[in-house]
Amino acid sequence: MPGRVPGLLRIPYLRTIINLNAMTPSSRRQFIRLFSGGITALPFMAWSDPVYAGEARERLKFANALDPLAMASDEDFWGWVRSSYTVSPNIINLNNGGVAPQPKVVQDAHIRYYQYCNEAPSYYMWQLLDQGREPLRERLASLCGCDKEEVAINRNATEGLNTVIFGLNLKAGDEVVLTKQDYPNMINAWKQREKRDGIKLVWLDLSLPMEQEDEIAARYIQVFTPRTKVVMVTHLINWCGQIMPVRKVADVAHARGIQVIADGAHTFAHLDFKIPDLGCDYFASSLHKWLSAPFGSGLLYIKKERIRDVWALLSSTEPDGTDIRKFESLGTRSFASEMAIGTAIDFHEVIGAARKEARLRKLKDHWVNQVKDLRRVTFNQPMAPHLSCAIGSVAVEGKKPEEVAGELFTRYKIHSVAINWENIHGVRITPNVYTSLQELDKLAGAIRKMAQS
Image 1 (cartoon, helix red, strand yellow):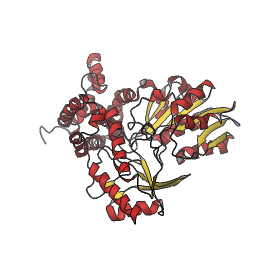
Image 2: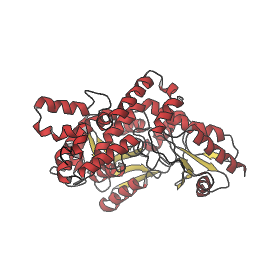
Image 3: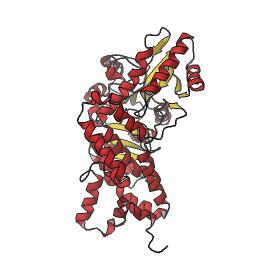
Image 4: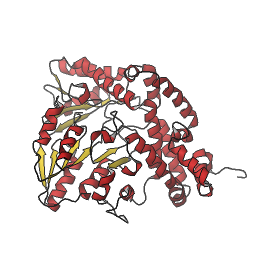
């Protein structure tokens, strides 16, 4: 059709990328600044949906004027957050711990990138969208609180942590400390190294919940020996929501020459922290959990001076080099999923890390406080506020976890997950920022009826 603008060119951001090769050095630097937040707030969102970005900026101005704890109770703000999601009216989703939905603005960005890739895949993916990875890396590093040369973009926490587990130079007899309450994919990776290389796994079997950080740290520290080379600490135990004192373990470990891996699958964009705060050498997370980025997106952090110590899991020109990009040799990837991470970062920053943590803890406390005094109800998450946040785990005496979860869904259309794993038995309840107080009231009412029956 005469005068028709090609689909790709309808989006200002993509028009900018198309002309990238023809840009002067000055205009190229301006483009990079746009996606690094150097010119405008919410840069990815501003390009993909400028109208929504304008509204989001106004919400951000309002939120920044109030204390995070006060904002945790501002139902108008959180109602706006809820309206930004496409949540089902037919079920109450309280299993956000496995994977979280994306707000509509992230879905739309993902779909648009995907459609444009399909107009001419090898051109739009490799020649155009590939140019956006470095600005995205910079935005992600800013959120992590680290150098951009310490962040690799990958698909999930499992991939990131497996990269480290299989990439470290360990030999027969070297000891690795971990717990039976860690995530199965990590446990299996370490067991594979044990079987293949003859390393020794030193297991802790924790009785959770635990209310004292020093007590938790002491459990790790007391099994360190001169042969201990690595300790892995799950920052938040996914089965029950227990937050672990990574820094306290790391400080002692480093004093003894022990490297520290933190499994941050459930804490990144959930708790208000920066990765270097943990004192770990290695950290990985799934961005499709608490950042609400596209499914199958993740990050790997490696302290700069440790990058050389880890072999690339997939082939690379310099698998033992010092460039963090050696961990991104995935071949053809989903450029659409990757680029839409930027919009998810923008959405997260509108909410704000401190406000988000405060709201998530309020949501957990809202339902827990309604049922905590019931005689037949017990919990698997700590009661100390700094040791748990969004995730709670409830048990009803006389009922198996799967019975409780089944009844919640069959009778009340509340989606949760039954947990039976290494000393932890209960139903995991995981709200998210779009969850309403009324939905949690319904959960509490359901638990009350089960406890009284």
